[in-house]
Image (tube, rainbow, N blue to C red; front, top):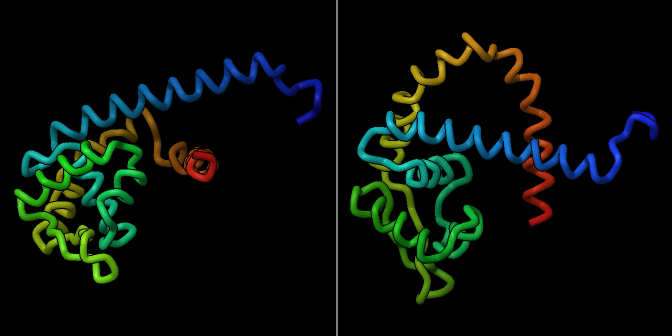
Length: 154
């Protein structure tokens, strides 16, 4: 990009605001659409936590999970308690610190996550009508790059 075609700093701020505004609206619309479909009365937060445990492994402490999800410890505790009540996670003692607990995904929790993914598929498969997979594949690397930058600059 030539210096002449680069946006002025004020314009850059407006562009980034528009970008994050669009991402925020997309997040709200997609969460609302998907939450209505989730089985077992799961919320998006609960599904997100189950998905996190499958993707990145379990055994994290509640404080580390709260930091990863950027929510308060109280909010994470509530989410974890609800998942424990459903039998989807359990708390094991921390081997290194007896005062701490580790969150462990149960077989029922893994099955609930897998069932949720299966339930969400029909809501995702109708997207190609207005948003073809090729376009999604094209923008994914850019979104991943933005996520990585934001994650490393918290």
